[in-house]
Length: 193
Image 1 (cartoon, helix red, strand yellow):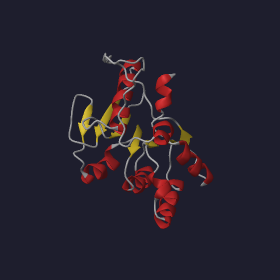
Image 2: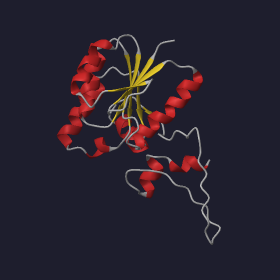
Image 3: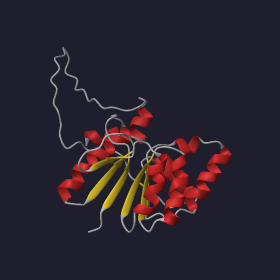
């Protein structure tokens, strides 16, 4: 079985993409899938290597990742340029997950550049966690899969709170609380199914 490399932020800090990756790690371990995580931060562990936010690391990685499956988790516009370059330089297969809708709001010129880069990037798979972005990519002629970002935690911590009413509370962490974002991007409704 080929090894899977995952590139993106890993806790700390606690946030959307880092939580997503750390929760996926549990499933990879349980399924016996060989993997390495390259943390876009500073933490290193047995299976997590820190890139220390170094652009030099990304340049070196173009040449050291050969014949494997690489899954990038996108969080900045510069990544689109990198994916294009990576797909033409590296012999590895490329999966990219876009974790936000920023592309929908880019300036028209930047949006055209990114769309052109995506059209000419050799993906094994392009995943969007937003149905709005997935629809936009489809209309732009870019094949992609819409896949909600919610990965259930492997452990739950039950906290008992005494309240005078009978309501139930569900706590979750997002960068910005809005009901539409909570459902469309973070798929909080799936937590109740």
